[in-house]
Amino acid sequence: MQTDEQKLNIVGAAAQLLLENGSETYRVEETAQRMAKGFGMEQVNIAAFPTSVFLEGRAYVRRISRRGTNSRRIAMVNEISREVEHGKLSAEQAERALERARSTPGFSQRVLIPAYALAAASFCLLFGGDAA
Image (tube, rainbow, N blue to C red; front, side, top):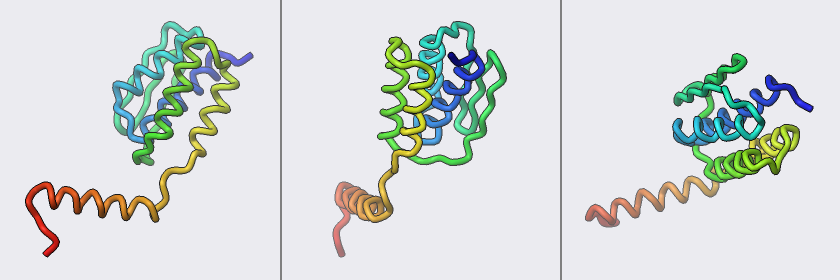
């Protein structure tokens, strides 16, 4: 059985993971609030900013210095939060699931660079450019 402080750390870790992977701040706050309620913590104030997360109940402050976009991780955290909210995951299970989400690899540079080039070429054609 985990304490409220440990559960709050799990909620904070989920919020941090969402921000690091490109989620909007209002969604981070909503997801963290749902997870906290799922853990039985009704009175938790959550404030997410692009570079930090604050959770009050017990002090939890994390600076977000690594940022990127990984929609796969965001989807995994959202699914974890839904399962916590509906009582399908315990705090221990949620913690392990968040660690799996954190370790899920993103796309490699071999995939990203051609995708960026294709996107740029598409916009060039969309705005009337050509290959010359």
